[in-house]
View 1: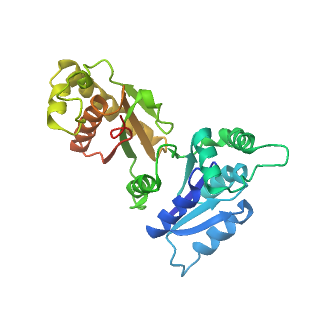
View 2: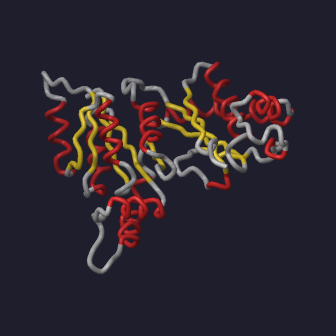
Amino acid sequence: MADILVITGLSGAGRSATAAVLEDLGWYVVDNLPTTLVETIVELASAPGSSIDRLALVAGRQHLELMPKVAGLRSQGHRVRVVYLDASTAELVKRYEATRRRHPFASESDGLLEAIETERALLEAMKGDCDLVIDTTALNVHQLKSRLVGVFDDGSTERLQVAVESFGFKHGLPMDADIVMDVRFLPNPHWDEALRPMTGHDEPVRRFVLDRPAAQKFVSDLVEMLSGILPEYAAEGKSYLTVAIGCTGGRHRSVVVAEEVAQRLRASGQPVRTSHRDVSRS
C-alpha cells in the first residue's frame, strides 16, 4: 500500500478526534480495530482493484500487540507510520469527568486516576518506538485538527517533516518535542512596557530580539546544527522531527526565534511547519 497510518495512545487523548480528521482528509479509517485483524484489513485494502491508497488504523485495547504487527507489515514492503496520542493525567481526568464515560481500564476496585496511570504504565514501553508523539494536553479539537492537517494532508511525501514550535517554560515542556532549546538568555521584551502587550509576531518585538548579536549567533548555530543532523535523522528512518524553542512565557523571544529558524530552514529547501503553543497565554 502507498500509506498505512496506525493511531495509538492513551484513552481520552484524542484517538476518535484524530480518526475523524483523517477521514475528512481522505484516509480510509478503521476505528477501534482488534490487533488480530490488522493483517486482514491491510490485505483487503491492498488487493488488486482496491481504491484504498491511504489506510488509517485506530487501535482498540490491544495496543501492546501493535508493534510486532507493524514490524511485520514493514517487512512485507508496506510504508507504516505509528502516531501516539498522549496527554497529562490531570487533563485526562478532566475529560473523562466531563463526558462521564467509563475508562476501559477502570474496575470496581480502582478509580479513574488509577485506571489512567495503569494504562500509561502499560503503554509507556511502546511510546518510544512510535514515529510521532502528539501531546494533546493543551490542544482543543480545532488545534489538534490543524496539527494533523499540517502533517498528514499530503500522505505521499517521503521527506522528513520538521516542525518548529515555541513554548513557555512556565507552562511546562512540550511532551512531543525531540529537541528542546532555551532562549531565556536573551533580554526579555516583557520588561519593556511598550512591547509587553505584543507578541513575537509583531515587528517591534522581532527587532528587539534579533538585533542582539547573541540572538543572531544562536539562530545561525542552531540552523547549522539542524542542517547537519536532519539528513541523519532521515537516514535512520525518522519521519517527523519537532524542535521546541522555549522562553519564560512563550509569547515573545521563543516565537521570534522559532519563526526565524523556520524561515532559514525553508530558504535551504527544507519544508518546515511552525506552531506557537503559548503565544496567546498570559
